[in-house]
Image 1 (tube, one colour):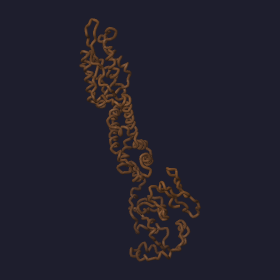
Image 2 (tube, helix red, strand yellow; image 1 turned 30 degrees about the horizontal axis):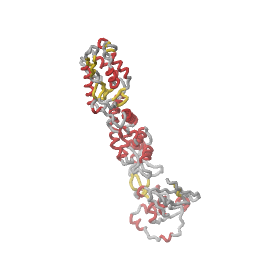
Image 3 (cartoon, helix red, strand yellow; image 1 turned 45 degrees about the horizontal axis):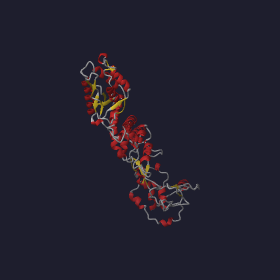
Image 4 (cartoon, rainbow, N blue to C red; image 1 turned 90 degrees about the horizontal axis):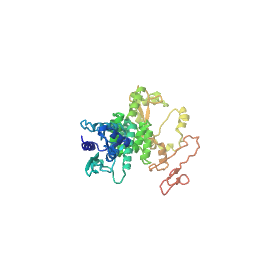
Length: 475
């Protein structure tokens, strides 16, 4: 085989690499050593001294090997070098490419290959001899596929390579550190509408989960190559997911941080200050763990709940009862209606008001009969008595009955009602209230102070800021 045929084989192989991979890469090696290995791989009789240097000791070929000899492609998950060519076992050149291919293939990829040049090396040149004859010299060369000429005019090669390398490194860290279960947990929260603007990340997270599964199925050597190839294809949102706000949440969950705390930190970064999460935070795993715990405690049958009926109540459930309570409990709805006698509320206008604590401790022990006057203002304080579906199931509660209660709308806010009674506004963008002196013997005096972003403080001596509209409306 002649050298020009050898050089053309190399060039053709590079063209094939360019068609099979949308990027080329550089491996980390000493290019001077690569050049020396090239020269030393020829048999002595095939690389004899010509004038002052060996026949293949050519400055053009040296420049090609030092500039392009460490370039590789990743094809079907394997490294492909420019030297992996079949020369039909040519005696002179096959040993050379075999040695170079092995040497380069064993090295680690250090960067994406980026260049502004269209070709490397010179195909041939003419040399005028002292005898006035012309000798044609052939060299290693290649004309790069247009897809490989990827250096943008506005950026340097180093800048582009640095950006691609950083993206790859972040992508691999994401694949190594973020667990698939963390991705599943966040996707569950998004499906539950429990994560602020979580739907914006749904497509990215779904794609990343697929990549994570592919990556986890590979051995470490192939994982290195996978990170290089995929980081260039998937886009910045996926490749750099670890550096985004959602990445902070993914890392926290992957590190087994408390889910509610992790979500709180995430929402502190991305949610407005007055954001309120629409639903409680829980994941499928948390649900499974809770179920397992309840099964171990034998409380699964205790979860069924319903509104209590009169038949559910026994004398053991009552702290205080009038003497005729048993007859009333066992009576009919008509008996109950018969007891509904109209009462004039003015009759009670001078009745003393006392705390529930004082009523239970001081009044009830000596009382024989109790009558209840239900006024409209008490409606917000009503609760529903809740009983178990399975009366024989163990109690869920610390007290010695299976009864519980539910507030109207499942919410109670006595402080809010007190503010409204006093004429306060409870519908503002931001409201806070304090309540104290629940005990009669407590004479403490507490005050609410609000320091606004503009530096103006609202408190008892300066109750309104006309600029912001903030006010202390009830004191």
